[in-house]
Amino acid sequence: MYGCQQVLLKPDKELSAILEFLCRQAHSLTNMGIYYARQLYLKTKRYVGKYDLEKHYKNNLHYKVFHSQAAQQILRSVYESFVSYKKLVKAYKEGRLEDKPRLPKYRKKAGLALVSYPGQALKLKDGKIRVPLGKQIKCWFGLDSYELAMPSNINFSYIKELRILPRNKCFYAEFVCAIRLS
Image (cartoon, rainbow, N blue to C red; front, side, top):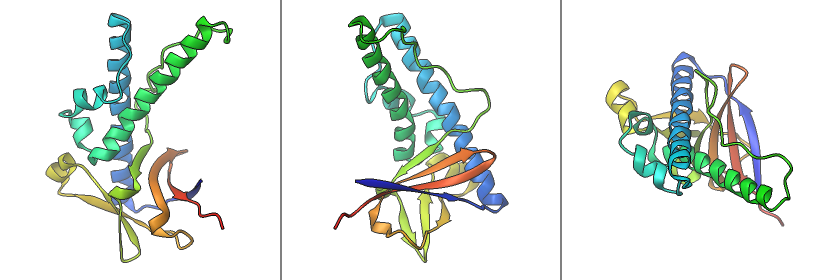
């Protein structure tokens, strides 16, 4: 079983700029993935494969901004939305759904999107979680990671995923943890 704890971040100006930049890049990468998957479907009636988006965008600057696992997670969420669409189309054809489903749509202009890091990418040092960044950010800004305070009520070894969630002009850290049942 898994649980999720959401923590409102109170970042300084530097961390706030990093988080906003990452969430903007996630927004762009998501829209690029949706564009590719939509075009593939509209032109060939073929659905995007699980790893197609990663292969296609591996050398893209929006992809390289992220730690590879975070970029993969962003593109996999696009893949998952097309898998859901495919299932809805099947249900519609079988008569189990009244309204015809629509292809996944693009995100709104100039927005921010969720960034997700698997637990294995994170490191704990001096009570802070080190979150890795991509090679492109290191090249541009000389940064290879940023740090977040570790919540005192969570055991670091139970963290399976860390999500940076932009909402209402604030940033939240969502810690997805394995729950041990006694």
